[in-house]
Every structure is written in structure tokens, then in C-alpha cells.
Image 1 (cartoon, rainbow over the protein chains, first blue to last red):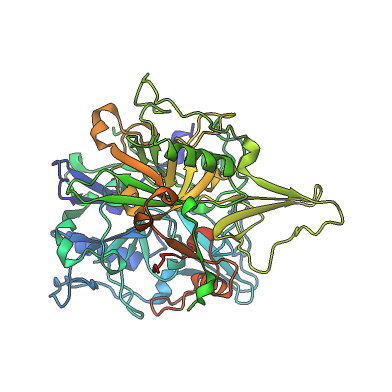
Image 2 (image 1 turned 135 degrees about the vertical axis):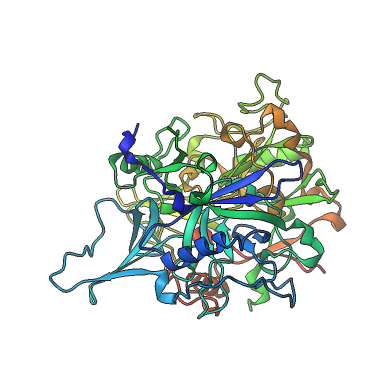
Length: 294
Length: 294
């Protein structure tokens, strides 16, 4: 059992409530997204709050479901090879334009600086970076340059992570077009697209949607009725107190998390006969739970 | 372009055609499974052919859909915490009983033997083994003991791989209960369960099924109507010539595959600004296509 103070409450400003149209049986569908904290992707995240507060997302839809890859939602006319020449929904004022450098957060120090250039005690081997571990509850990859005394780090494309759709470089996307990962971690997208958050509730309402038969999994015009309408996306902080979802995550700096990560690498429950002896970061989902309330 | 002789025809004896009940709109749903070749899991695979030929699979159902994990099909009464005490469908005679050693294939040699104890020129770093690469078109993990001069290898739980459900050790399963991976590669299952094949067509008919709300993603009694009936599973070799599906895979020993794997690690299409510089084995799906026919 983790001590109560190892659980960290997620600020209401970092939670988005996305309400999909009810399913075919009339059941409500609500998805909760947690946005990332500093220092990652803050420009895009500011845009997402702006878009939510302008109610720009209300009435968009899920337009793309590509098996073992992503579910993507936004303006049906955006970057959709199946929509042809259609008018796009005008974006609100005040959106920031982010650069490709902003996909990665880098720290550099002089020769006498205290920056950590080697992995910490807890770390995970990785095929895509020098090492991976968790920061403030998020899966992060690290790369070090001894020459420039720079540590670069960036969030990792695990199952359920949410990113910002974009057009070809140098476009970096605004936040109007979002996707989540529904298959094996597509790590080649790391440092190529901004990650902004993750799905913490309702994932199955996205991952089980019918796959699109068009290019890249977009729904074709003939199957436009498969597009799931998104009724609204709201910042939880803007909801009346009684309607705000409240979630907390297990601190990734504590002893309980370190034990949990070790147990994920070496399963001891009776089903397992051969412990793996290792794990990749996307096989160690950070525990998240609803707060019990007051 | 790969030379024609780099494509390898899959024997009809290694293909299973699984016919699901039509979907809610009446569309047919057919899934094709490729079984693994020697030396892996051949006892279970023999059982699966026996079960298919006894038509034992006809009338079973998909009973478990756990998000980011597996879809499982078989006897609704088997190992299903939601079914309570129900009678199980009797199995045919002649099924082999496999051991836990059979999850892994090992080769040992004397000091003067020619066995390769080090990784080949092409290999992939791995968090779960000494290295990974492909054999006869399949993703394989390797581990070496210098002391005993033994190389152990085993197939890897990537998205779409098919395995044999089992009860607690020492049970190893018969092949009557099968599952496929619908999320991030659950590599901790490697060497703990027999892998027998992979889905090569129709994956989306399984991965988009509604998730079960019971323990481990089993459908509860209240949602028993979500179980997808399986009308039949047939060995392709037993079908009339005109109805046999014909598939081929890109040889994983050839130059074309090596280039493909390298390109997966270092994407050069214009969308990417930062090549990953590496890839894990489950991000390099072996290319498989329908044969063009005569």
C-alpha cells in the first residue's frame, strides 16, 4: 500500500472532459484526458485550453481510426484525404505557433554545472533513446550529449497517450486536431509530434471504434456515418464543482512506484513461471485512480 | 521492390480461416490466422489442427476483450470467472499434453560446436532478452548461456500474435482456448504461454470488439449478448481449392527485408523530421500479402 501522500491530485486545470455522442444503445460515453505538466508541450496545451474555452471542439468528430496505430478527432475537413475540398472550421484568435524545437526539452550546463549526464539509479533500457524513466508521473525518454553537456528529454508515445495532429513540416499543429495511440507504442513519432496528455478514463470508447477503410484509417465518404460526434470538450476547472472529475496519480518519485515498476519487470503472481527480468517503459503504466472525494 | 523469389508462399496447412457471425449490419467477418513453422510450439499447433478438423471450434465464441491486452475466444465455460459453474464442451481424443519447457526452443553444443553464441549482423536491442531478430518470417527473442553453451529462443508477443490460453502452472493449455494481442506488446507473457501464430487478415474485426466489463475483460452474464459467435475455424488445406486463401510473406533472410527493417528504424518519408535511430521488434511487422493467384 502506498502512503496517502504518495498519491498526487491532478489539477482541474489539467483535466479535459470529452463527451462523445451516446453509443448505438444510448449509453453515454465520456472520456477524460490528463494534460501534461511543465516543461513539456506547454504552448500546445495552452492552445487546447483556448480551443476548449472557445467551445471550438463542440460538434467535431472522430474521423480516423487506424488499427494498431491511432484514433484521431477534430474538424472532419482537416488533413482528411477522404473529405476532398471542404471548408474548415475557423479557429479562434490567440493560438500560439510552436516550433519543432518544442517537441524536446533540453537543458545545457557549463563544465562545472550540476546537470545529471548519466542515468539515475532507476532507469529502463530503451531501443529509442539513451534511457527512459518517469518524471512527474509521465513516461520520458532521455538523450545525453557529453560534447555539448546537454540532456534532452521528451515524452514517449505509449498506448493511450494524446498528441497533436499536424501537416508536413514545418507545421507543428495547433491542438485543434488530436489523436490517441491504440496499439503498440509508435515510438518513431517521438520528437516528431507534440504529445500533450493521455487518456485516463473511457479509453475503450475510443479504442473499440470501427476502423476506417480509407487511407490512414480515415472514414471514407461512404462510411461518414461511422464518424463519432464529439459533443463537447471542457476543462474540468470550468465545470460546476459537483461535476468535476477528480483523479490522482501515484508519484513516480516514491518508493511505492519503484517497487511497482520492479514488480512489472518480474511478475511474481502465480500465473507466471518465468519472470521477464525487464520491461519497457510502455509496459509500466502509471497508476491513476479517481479521488475518493471529501 | 523485392525480387519475386523473396516472397515465400505460406502452406495451406499453416492457414486457419475463422468465420465470425456477421456484424450488426450483416457484413461477413472472416479472420485468417497463420500458424508458426518448426521448431516452435508444434505440439499445440498439432492440437489446433486436430480441434479444427474435429469441428470443435464451431459454435464457440469470443468471451474476453481486455483493452490494451487481449481478445480471447473458446468455450464460454472455460476459465471464465463470469460463467460460474458451467459444463465445458468435451474435447476430442488425441490432444497432446505439452510441457513448460516447450515454450522455449533451446540448442546446446559442445565446446567445439558451431552454434552461434553471439548475435548475427542484423539484430535488434531488446529490453526482454539478449537480442531479437526474425526467423522464417517470425519475431524471435534470443538468450545465450556461455556456461552451458546454450542458445534459447522463443517467439515474441507482438500485436496480432496468437497464443494458447491456459490455467495455472503446470497446465500449458491444449489450443482449445486462443487469444490475440490487441495492445502494446505484453512481452512478460513470452516464455509463459505458447505462441502459435498471428492474425494476417481481419484483425480489425477482433480489435474493435466491445471491451468486457468483467474481471480480466470477460463479458459478464449481463452482457453475454456481446459474445461474438464463431461459426467455424477451418484449416485452409481442407477447403475446396477455389475457397482457399493464399498468402505469402517477405522472406526475413533477404536483402529487401533488411532494408525494410532499417527504414522502419530511420523513417525517411517527408512527415518525419527526426529519425528514431532504432526500433523494437514489434514495430517491424513482417510484410504479408495475398498471393496474386495463377
